[in-house]
Amino acid sequence: MNKKELKKIADTFIKANLEGFEGISPVIKEVKTESDEYAKSLKTKKAKLKERIFSFTYVNSSGFFKSVAVVTMTEDGKIIKTSKSG
Amino acid sequence: MKEITALYDSKRISKKYSKKFTVKIQDALVSSSNFIQFIDVCESKKKKTKDFLLSECRDSVILIIGGDDIFPFERTESFVEDGDEDVCTDNWWVSSNTDSVVPEIEISRVPDSIDDDEGSFIKTLELLFKSNKVRADEKAGMTAEIWKTAAENVFLALKCQGEMLSSPPHTVENKLSFDSYEGGLYFNLHGAEDEAGWYGQRQRFSSYREEYPLAILPKNISKGIKNSFLASEACFGAFVNQKKASDSMMLTALKSGVKFCIGSTATAYGTFAPPISEADLLVSLFFTEFLKKKNASLAFLNAKRIFAKKNLEKNGFLDDDDKKTLVEFVMYGNPLTEVSFE
Image 1 (spheres, chains in turn orange, blue):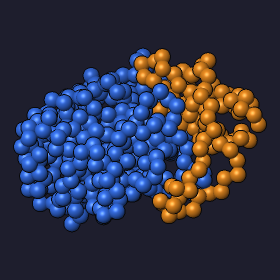
Image 2 (cartoon, rainbow over the protein chains, first blue to last red):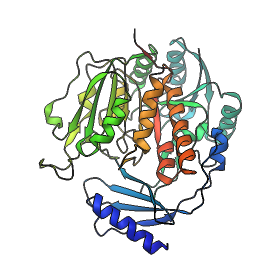
Image 3 (spheres, each protein chain N blue to C red):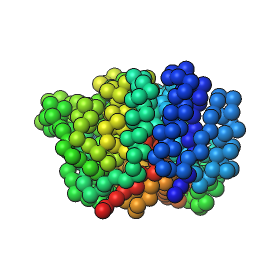
Image 4 (spheres, rainbow over the protein chains, first blue to last red):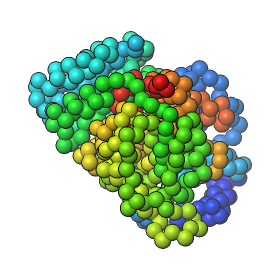
C-alpha cells in the first residue's frame, strides 16, 4: 500500500477510537528498524522482519495538555501497535 | 555489598554551593556504610569517564550527584515527532549504543532543587541513605479515569494490599493525606513541564464536568510517609530542572520519606489498547523485578532490558515510542533500596 492508503487506515482508527484529533494531519515516518546493535547488547534474537514499518503521529497542542497518539503499522496496512501520551 | 560509583562535578558544586561542599557530600554518603568511590567529572572528561564506567565499573551502581544545574542530564533526540525538543536522560552514561537506548549498568541520581542550600541537600542525602530498606506490604495508587484499565494491570504487579483512586471523581479538593504510610506509590496521571501537580482525565463518555481535574499536589505527599517508593507514568513526572522542591512531586517525595522514584523527563506514552505497552509495561516489569528482592537500580535496569528484549523478540525492532520510553525514564534516590517484608 502507498502512504496515502496507509494514512487512511490510521485516520479511520483514530477517528473511531480517540477524540481531540479531528482534522489533525499526522507526521508520517518510516520507522528505523535496524536493531542489530540492541539485539547484540541484549544477547537476544530478534524476530524476522519482512516488511517496512510506518508510524503515524498525531499531535494536538491546542488542549490543556499536549496530546499525542501514535499508530504503528506495516506497509500492508496491519496495525501493530497504538499508543497515547500520558 | 555492591559498590556505588558516585559522579559529581566539583566545579559546578562549588559555583552553586561552596568549595567545601563536595567534601560534605562525600562525608554524608560515606557515613551511610555503603562502599563508595567518587569520580569528579568535568565537561572535558565526560567521554573518558563514560569509557571507564563501561569497562571497569560494570558491577558497580552509578550514582549522579545533583540536578541539571550541577550535573547536567545528557540530551537525546525525541524519537517520536511529538514536539519535545530534546529528552533528558541518564542512559548515556551506561549505554554503549550510539543512541543510548539500552542501558548496561545500574544508575540513579540524587537531584537537588533550585531552592536547596547545603543543609537541606545534605539532609536529603542522609534521609535517602539512612537505610536501604522499604516496605512493600501496602500500596496506594491514583490513575486518570480514562486509563483505569491499563493502570489496574500495572497496579496488580505490586502484589500487596491497597487501593487505587480514580481521577475523576478524586480531585485535589478531596484532601488526600497519608498517616504513617510505608509502601509503594503508583501514579498514572497527566503531567506537564511547568506544572507542580498531576492531573486526572475523565473517560470519553463520562458524566463528570471537568475534563482534566487537578488530582494531586506535592504538598499531599509531604507528610506521613516513610520507607516508601514511587513510580509515575506522568508526562514530565521526573522533569525537575530549575524547580523548587515544592514545585515537583518527585523532589518533594525524596525529601519526605520516599527512598526512590522512577518517572519520565518528557512526554510519556502508554497503552491505548491491550496488551500493556510503553510506560505501563516498563513500570509493571519494574514492580515485578523489585518484588523479587532486587535492589531498586538493578530492578530498573532489568525492567528496561526485559522491555527491550520482549519488543525485539515480538516485533523484530524497537519502535519510536519504545525507544523514547527507554531513554526518558530515570531513577532518582537510593539505588540500593530493597524491599523488606519483615
